[in-house]
Image (tube, rainbow, N blue to C red; front, side, top):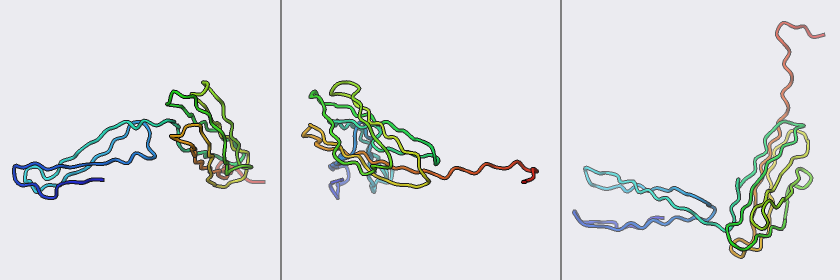
Length: 167
């Protein structure tokens, strides 16, 4: 969001205030804004902002994509890392894909690092989307949701070599 002085006299100064909403971001972010002027020499000025959003819990990746062929068992791992000094406790709250895939939570480093493993069950071609919601003991982030996208494609039929006869 930008707030700025609408008119600046020639040779004068003006103020531009840029606000970045960081909800949903974690780690390094880059944002920019373009200032349009009536200056014949510099018609545009580009302002660049770089920052680091410190969050209590880092989730990587933040979404799970499981794409493959029918009959395959697909697995993806999400790492969850506590950024506060207090040990993190994760408790499963709601899982919308029961029966289609499974998840397990493994504590890698006590109270600090976790791996959440998502595994599909063998099935027929389909696409679906769901989530795993976890409760935490951090008041700064009392719950977190990991979104999951699954696309199972029909296995391609075996190609017959050219020139061969079918019996």
